[in-house]
Length: 98
Image 1 (spheres, rainbow, N blue to C red):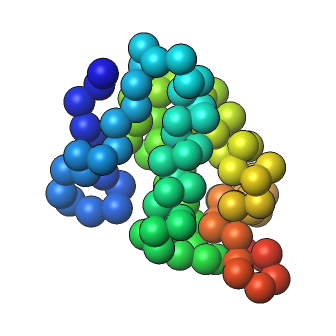
Image 2: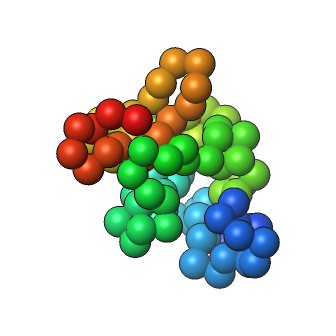
Image 3: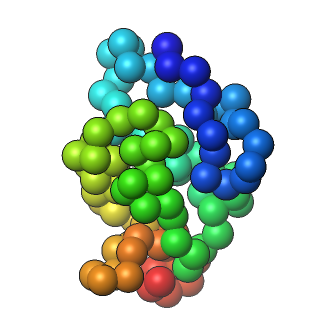
């Protein structure tokens, strides 16, 4: 297990954000589920940006490709939308637009 990393949501340590690098669940799924949990908890609000790929790499200790694949999974689940040249945003509650 990797120790908790500094959260991109605050200056405090986030002991709940732990990715199991040795477990059976793929890392990208774990990262996507962690972000989805933040969205569902209201920590990441509709039409607001999620952390960048670089921030996800630092937060979760994963490769950039893993972070990118996690974002793709969230897009497929309808949790986020990506605006080319601007970033990835939590999907809006009514229109689904960022």
